[in-house]
Length: 612
Image 1 (tube, one colour):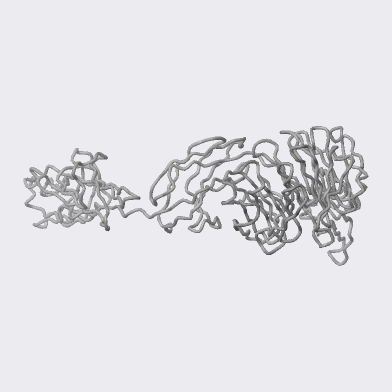
Image 2 (image 1 turned 120 degrees about the vertical axis):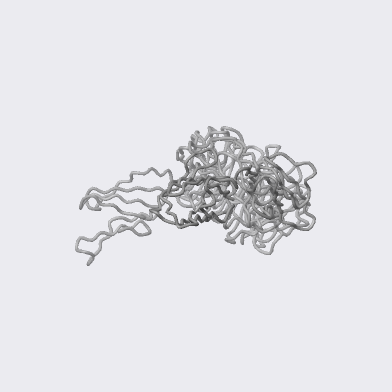
């Protein structure tokens, strides 16, 4: 039996007594399989697999874990190479876009590392608790401890456009280096000793610094530290994340899952999103002014329109994430909790819409622009939100099996609530991911009712007619068609018909339109129908009929056999009633048209009837 905290319990007496055979704090056992009394395989969290061949006394790990510690920071230095840093001095290195990772000796003395930064392909720094700073000048092969004189916990590194490197930390600590981290100069400020921890730092130009604190404030300077400003973060709770694209435009995240934006350096803020879980926002990053991500708890949010609309992406690990960096384009690596969680984000999808107003019962063709690699059998699925823009119970509009850019036909079903706040997205199945939401809300409108009611039989003899009626509504516009071709001048809500054809009507309310199902009209040449051989001996009624035809012998002569044919002579049915004098014939399933009844008996006859 498995449990949390790596304990695996074993009993040999039916459960009266249990012994614990394993204890690894990193491992939570989820399932145990035994194929003999001594051979066990245990599957656990984080992809771990353990095996015992001696009844649980000893265990070997079959899975491969690079590290067991939380990762706090990641830095990509090319499209394939990246470094990650975390608890207990952990530094990991990949050269194949995150497929495999190699641990490195950081010489951090076991201190927790919070951030990592590379100045170029060979020179990098990592910082962490108790003022720890380690440096490499050979691409991570060796790391050396830097005696900086800083004693505070350090949280973040930032390189300016002029190659100055800033570090910030607890107790409002700020320092900079002009020689790639070999020596550091303290930046005095008026917030030390007041309970402010400086968590993140960004610079713009040579004079502007913007700093995120552990309180509901940002700290800014626009004169290289000569004067400092305390700016609200937009909310009333602690600031936990920050990203500015320039000195005026930026985002903050709070400890209760709020995302705020500003376009004036923090003077005014707009609440862009409140996450469902109310978890702290751990990280905000953008690749360009439109595409950005943030992490809150174990959820990943993504925007493709500059932050006014955010949608969720799948987090396969279900573990909290703390940092993200980008390899190329929007392909990224993210790190977090859950025993060195590392996620690779690949591929990207964009949806091109032919319109921003969708009408129910109508079909459209959308374009999926898929950049990246999808696996064979992948299905792109178009999902529509509810009328409030939420995807709790999305409506699937259409799907297509494809591995790249493709058109996809959709149909907007009837029954949706009219609204102007709908959102739309793509979901891919292999690999599973969602696209960003459309940047502009779309409108869904109910199409006008389009169906035809016939004012009489739609199969009749030449010389007769039928009037077709369309369902009417205020200010609706009508156009009638015969056999798919427009009938010029037929724009009323009724149509007089005296010829065979497939009739439809298109109904428009000025925004949405809908075409009715086809109504078939059949005009039959009925000449000779009243001159049927020996017809005077039989009564056939009703004629025409939609469902039941009754045939009765007038003088009680027996009807031995009836053969029903269509007008071409093709046999439809043969009935042997057994010398009956009255027969009821069900013709409901027959197509519209004229039919012959050939009667064999004492008085042979040929009768005709019309099926409506």
